[in-house]
Image (cartoon, rainbow, N blue to C red):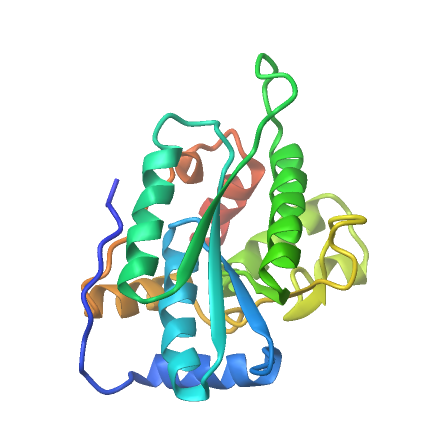
Length: 223
């Protein structure tokens, strides 16, 4: 897997960065603190880098967090890699560790997702952030559509992740808004942007395991 590294660049903003800045302008509020959920994968790393460029020109305040679910031995080291990248970008970063009540049980993705949102909601409140940006992309929308269509979902469910919505954490996420500024962007074009900046990302092995439905839908969408 690739480690997260960074290289500052004085090159003018790319077309993608300018388009991303417009999305942040629409969805984010420059008067408050914007939280960023950054796992270290390509999507969230692109979110971090693009948000940083946007924030500098808008005088916006950013904080970032990485959730360590404790499910893989490499997870803490990867989170520390994200912390180093954030430090190089002058973004305050926090590692949030999920302490599971029963470490002997296998963890479903839905359970990990609930825990992640709860940790992020508590962190956002402590950080003064009323909005958290997530790195979902156009690819995530396609994958979600395929998953929900297979499950027989109605039209509302088929819409997939929305550009803005409430946090699913309750009650800790009450009044917390989640935004997804990168929904109009494809994963590969975001990776090209990172490559152009000499910034690496983490490859989570679970993203290649076809025991997960989302991975199977990803492979289906790529055909």
